[in-house]
Length: 292
Image (cartoon, rainbow, N blue to C red; front, side, top):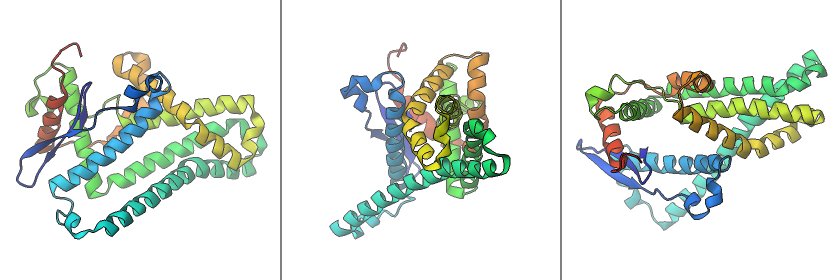
C-alpha cells in the first residue's frame, strides 16, 4: 500500500499472477476539520487513520490474493455477519486492554518491584526504568511475531515498500534492478514512530514526575495518566518523524537511529515479485506535477 499527496492505492498479486491495483479511501477527517491538521494534533489523527487503513488493506489483500477463503462470504448469512462484527468489537476491546496492561501497567508494576528492593529514593527515575522495560517488551514482541511465517512475509513486503520509496527519492527509474540494492531501513517508518514514542514518553513522563513527584506513588493513577498522555506523545513523535524525513543531519540521524535499528526486525529483504508489487503501487500515487 502506498499513499501519495492525492490518492492511496494497494497493489496485490492475485492467484493468476496478475497485479491488481485497488484504490483506497484517501480522504482524511483533517480535510473536513482543519484544526485536526495542526502540528501536535495531526499525529494522533494520522496514527488512528493509518491503523484503520492498514487493517482494511491487509483484509482486502488476503481476500484478493487468495489467502482468504473465497467461498466464505457466500456461506455466511446476515446473522453470521452480525456475529463476526460483534467478535471484532470484542477482539478490539481485548487488544486495547492487553496493550494497556502490557505496555502501561506491567512496566509500572515491574518498577514497583524495583522500588521494594532499592527504596523510594529511585521514584524520580521511574519514567526511565519504565521506558526501558516498555522498549524491551516492544522489541521482544516484534521479534517473536517476526518468527511467524506469515508475518515474516509481511515484513518482506515492508522492506520492498521502503526500498521502492528510497529509489523514488533518489530520482532513479522505478525498476526491480534499481530498487533491489536500496536500503530497507527508512526514517519515516511506523516502526521508528513507535520506538520514538517510547523515548518521547520517557522525557514527558520525567517532566511530570519532577513537577508532581507524588503521582508515581499510585500505580493505577500513574497508568491512567500515561494513557491520557498518549495523544501528546503521538503529536510530538509525529512532528519529530516529519523533521527526520525532511532533513539529513547529525541530529536527525541520532533521533532516527533507534527506530532504524529496530527495522532490522520489522523489515526483511524482499524477493523480486514483492518489489514488483511495491513499484506498481508507487507508480499509481506519484503526482503528475513534480513539485508535489
